[in-house]
Image (cartoon, rainbow, N blue to C red; front, side, top):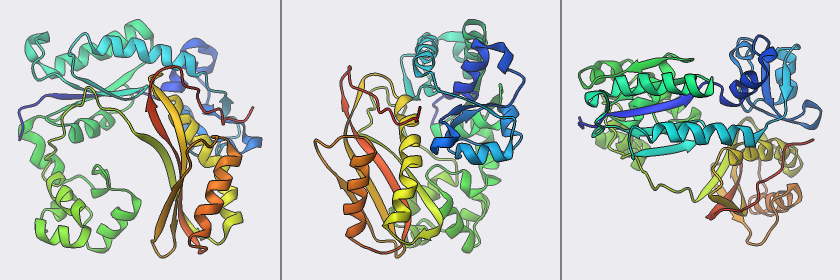
Length: 352
């Protein structure tokens, strides 16, 4: 086990928290931030009062209102969210130069060599949470662990407004009881595949050899074997830069034709815009692309330089990509390549 001390900080329902902070009248009612329900809008985030009704991020706004008829959906104010994010980043960098922002509302910190609080990662995390609340009046949850994989799990363990610590001595026992769907990189499809093999916890995953996992899952099998023991050697990447950003959905029932695929496109694009808005201003959106995975698991990706990034451009790309297989579709994805440099425009896909 590495001797690193990693903190993952994650703001609680960030967009909604800013809205409730700026208008206290919203604090006691179910609240979501997202697009208009009559224009196929999606939920970007929601407060915990709304989550009690089953409302979740990326859910269609119409569905959210069916679950919670009293839900108030407000339009996102990205400039306000970015301003708060800059203040949070300023606070984080008071403790270490090794900060890896993941989005506007979460980041990793490597405090292994930090002199603050005699090098105690737990006390640093406590002080970060105290300062963010005192200076910005929003809450953050934090996780402390020997690596990024475990720190991210820990930050979610006692949400909202929580702190959870996994010490090196606790790693093996803690990870043994983790469901495999909590592992980094394990999505719904992989979790179901593991379940069919009788693997539902990391303790059960440990019974498989690395060779057997590689035979079953390819190169990802080696990664699975490491995570089952809580091993993650990824460093906190201070200068890490995204090359692209995308969203994709796997559908419970295959989409039978191009018309069915095109019908899903506005929701995907609205979700993509929400994720783009969470990036800082040093990124500039460039080429749009689409990904199509057909029912037989063959897939294709198509992008076009110089194309616009509106709905019509994505419709044309999707039509051309679908024509490559012309079969029922199990997964659709939309995305955009990213260039470094300030001053780029943001996608504007949230319907007015």
